[in-house]
Image (cartoon, rainbow, N blue to C red; front, top):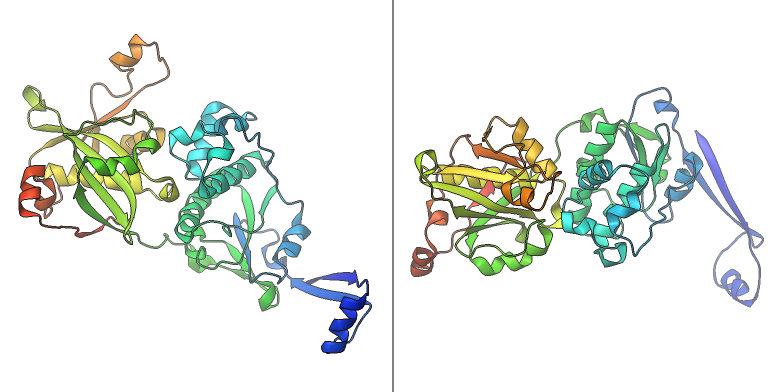
Length: 384
């Protein structure tokens, strides 16, 4: 068991004397704080994620500093966010941003000063993780202290996936316990519990289930999501818009549009937009809501096609048995050829998974839905 003593000399004056007179303070020359911790159980063992937790002032930061220098961020706050990652290739920079849940491509082009608190925190986290050397332990103090708790959960899940995928090591200090099931740490340590290290093989499981609700909305709801999609903000008003919420908070939207054609394309629809708000990116919600929408529309006998240039969504569909590549998959579109965008290869697929029945009310025309004015927001378990 290691022990750290923090001793400070007291500079006495009238105010400190007031404290001595008023309260039972035994030592008027110095203050002393003792912090205990024991990391011997993990020496020589393989691990990726550790958490030092406890209330403010219990010694979390002191323990963290005993492990090394706290990682810092040196952003040029006026440059585009992705440009600050110039110590790695553009492809790798995009990958690490997406891995931290910063999947909204327009966000990459904004300066740090224009990001929300949640986006700024993820950006700093991405920078610290990416900048760390191969054998360096990444040290993060006050983890998720300044972000919304739903954001903290999404961020934690995205972080642990990236850390384990890359084989890095990270130790986080936090006063919040609600992130544990989302981080699934290999070990935890609390100064308030004597600094004893607890290994957590029991937490090696999937993160808590997310249950979303889906409802049909009109074109105006697109305004909440449009600035977070990499394509133009304009979208055809004839689309069917499906809103997904989590605990009554909007998290994502899918827009589907009729795509009439001859032969195999008769009775076809295309998923025109799939967007997840930044605070909830990194949880796999985009993949799940696009798959659900395709599955729901397939139940009507529709053929559902989709095209994306977003790497995470495209690669997911490449690997999934629920999707079949079309002839255009992996090719540069005609519009991109005209403007000589040689790098913008599209992922093009048809949904071939099982249909989902029971959501007929959501697929009616807007006119029918306005006529019956029936609200329908069935709970949807996406199995995330």
